[in-house]
Image (cartoon, rainbow, N blue to C red; front, side, top):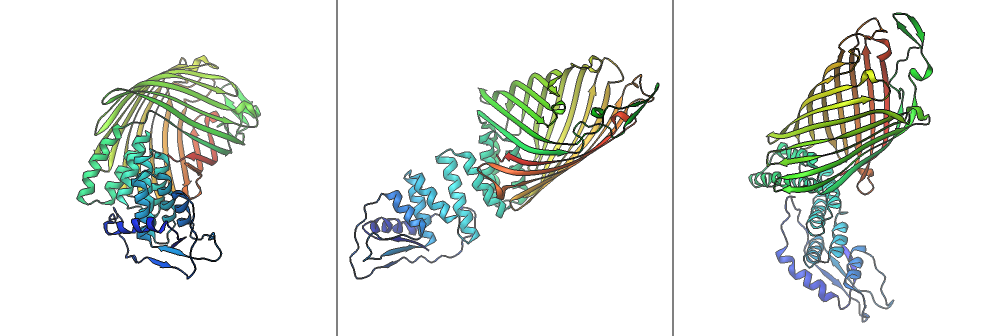
Length: 488
């Protein structure tokens, strides 16, 4: 029960109480029976009037314990949950959003999970629809889904908000999860409506990830101290051997979207990453701006972009490239999405001109929701890298699969990839043509129960193994990451 002192503001409470006969039906949660009685307790002494604002009154209502102005009087009103819901709804409807938010947040601490979820859902709708605080609304919906993964209406709202934020991939994933959870006919109709909402794109946005990154092999080098060649064995410099270290890794992306038409936009992106170590000769920096048009439809999207990319390694220029790429996404079912990526680039290696040349790639992936809290995907790719020296020119093909599962407020993602690489010819210094078999396994966890605002902690473990016919390229690597990332 929620308690407050009584004075002339009792009339305001009675006004709210009169609306209980038309209490809104809960939108998607089973409601438990709640006592509708209101009790007014008064002693025999008169109660002095309070001169407080309506917002302060609501703060007292939710605080549950208040100190009377007069020590000689003690009067209180006890509101049940139905009445407090009606009170919050009335504040929302008249535009008093601060009051409504305080009331909804108080209700979100209710021990009853159904009532707690309903309060968060109403709060999320108000934050998104009336106040346009989309990130805050998404966090409330995420709380609901942490406790109730099959809450279809909440997941639909989250998909819509992802679309408004420009997180189109996340929005599509949530829609697939809704389909996988099983839907009543009326919600199926809403699916089609929210699929169209993916056309609504956020004009600006971005994301950021910052982690501490311990690594057993920061330079992806061999552990051997010697190198066999056609002219004899050489002792490798320590910097050419595997080195361990603790780095700081930062990755992020920002974008600006300008509308060109009803279903077309001009999209400009700036992506970057940086990994720094105590020894600066292993620092790695990448910056890549791109710009191009995109077209969207109810079933998918097509985007084309071009731009340069710079990479510095050890604080010195390493490569420069200019690239064009395209991306096509298409829904091939209510729970499955097809994606095709293609790119063509010219790579200029500033340290070894023999490695410069054209690079082309093609990848096809399928993402599917198995249930409301579980999904996965498979990607097949092929890559051709030209070079001025055929010993550096390669062709490769690979496969990558991933699986994610939500456990309450924790999301765990596991991935496994394999890539086969073959050089056109052997390098003159080595006995054989280079043939690599790369294996990568990773496990990532995000922990929303520890979030601060829209930032959530994450942990990632990665194992890499390259088996190569040339000793110089053969290595293994264990790496970890512990840090934070934007949740939406």
